[in-house]
Image (cartoon, rainbow, N blue to C red; front, side, top):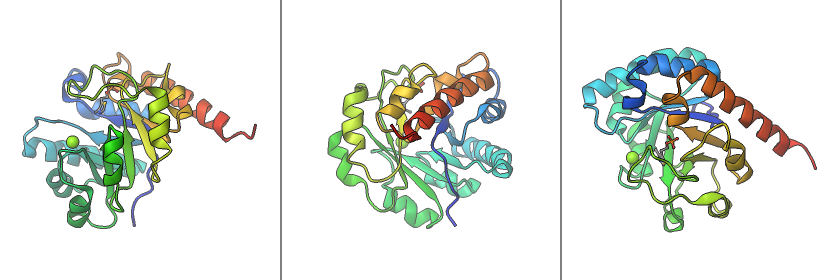
Length: 217
Ligand code: TZP
Ligand code: MG
């Protein structure tokens, strides 16, 4: 069965930002603070290093019921027994990943523009939409969508959507108000002096925003 996944506070790791503390320690702190999903993202890591890192993360996360996804690398996800992949426009198409990983894998897909909406097919479990706000973390990121464009695109997507790009505890509620089901963050947790506290602050902002959205007006 496909594992249940909760997009509400999605940690995306960065090798340079997690280096001082260590990847596993940073992920553990984020989980203690309330992260619900983890993506191993390392654009330059050799396959062997990535597989080892993914295996260590999977061993930590699985007993806690938190799925592990791997950015870009279907081969690494498969070798490490990760729960799925997160793919972008330049990666293997979702249907190809699905064929390799099977029906139970979680397949995420990045969308940055309206022209990409038609490529969302049945293999896609959720969409990462962004950047919603300006970000310094991804130098080749498209220009920030802003909340209004984000909301307009989100309304045309039938699967769950996680917002990404420049999200912090201070603006997470705005991403959720624009229709996101959750927020994905890199620097707000990985570069924080205290990643657990940072995740906790995000968690509080998200929970408050989701609760106010659920309340009938
Ligand atoms: N994809 C779109 S923006 C982004 C990615 C991976 C980087 C988000 O990083 P941050 O530090 O949360 O702005
Ligand atoms: Mg990619």
